[in-house]
Length: 333
Image (cartoon, rainbow, N blue to C red; front, side, top):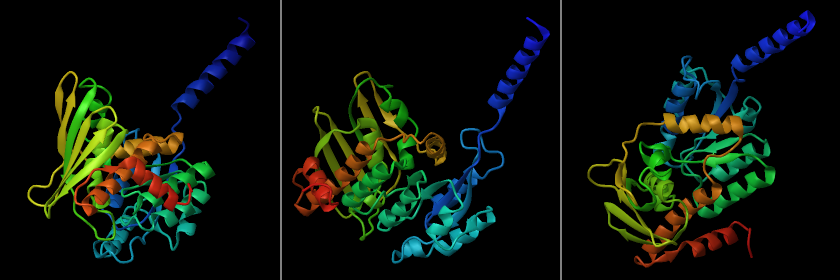
């Protein structure tokens, strides 16, 4: 090899090594809604100067504080969380539109699902990748409308409870117990009168159930008392999955999955970091880790549970609930 070619080879090799070792571009993240403890927990992880590589280079730089206007448990938190997040170096903006001029990606954290459709539309029209915290919306019809708008504008979005990434849940869903034959999950399930019962907090346990079982539930039956809900879902392949919502006694997260090879306890819950790893990966790749079909079926499951309660505990078809919601969203005749 001639001297000239040798030098050219060394220059190209050095350039490739430098490129491989250079850190990714830092994403500027914005938060909408400062009425949940999630915003402080998320920002502390993402803005940590010593953040691990799987959550690094994605920094919360701006936030729009307003969320719910009439849920007292949410409204009362905004001043405190606004002050706390400012101490973490986050700028407070006066509107969502102002926020969108300062960020690359958005976390919609408003605890109240009712404003989510309007808030999400602003982000979607701006073309910013969007994570929507629970609840995705305050109705299945609005959840469908959000996903339809994102698809129409070709904007990546996803929504998930952090309990999807509780210890053991992902391993079970990926085959650690063989084929999943069924599962029972439980979580706190406090109720907020402005939302379908399980949307507010029962979503956590329902999301665990769906992460393990996958989509395909055909009908649900709900048994309800003041302190407890039990929702039994029948999947199309004969499998049964149940969710127990707890409002009295010890309120924790967990369950058991039944497999073709073994049965396994679910849990414990280890916090928000595993979800944040997926959020950062999503923001960088534009690929949602959860299929919208599954997410919408989760909300159909919970809305069907409400319908079963209204009708005295009779079985309710998810297909019927989804069709009704699509019609309400203006998508089907």
